[in-house]
Length: 158
Image 1 (cartoon, rainbow, N blue to C red):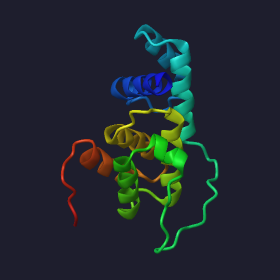
Image 2: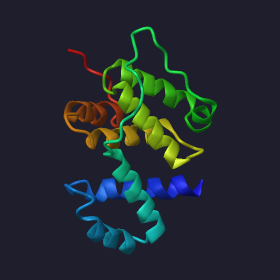
Image 3: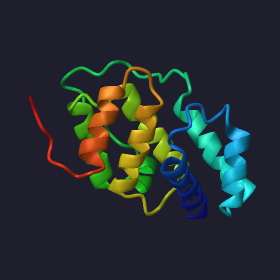
């Protein structure tokens, strides 16, 4: 799908080349200039910035706190876009307390927005990392994702 490839392409480029930029929204015009020079069209850049902005949305997710016996059931629409491996990984991250139920739902929403028919576990890890980096008080989880998920090192439990 063109939308997802374009959005992810721009996001990966931004993350790899400009991850040291503190406030993307404040530097949006400058970054847009850099992205234009790199060959990305304005429409692709705009979609990527909109997607990034949505990571920090203060929007309330209307779910009740699940109890220990509850199970997250994926809808047919979610299953169409999120493969079994990715769904299992999301559940693992929640059970490992890297993601809260709210964060899991936000991650699912961000994945669905990409509309990527070839969405992989590696792409999910990047989405989760970007999501975690845009949340307050999630530094430890972001470090865990960076060290474990992206470098494929075995987890260290203390």
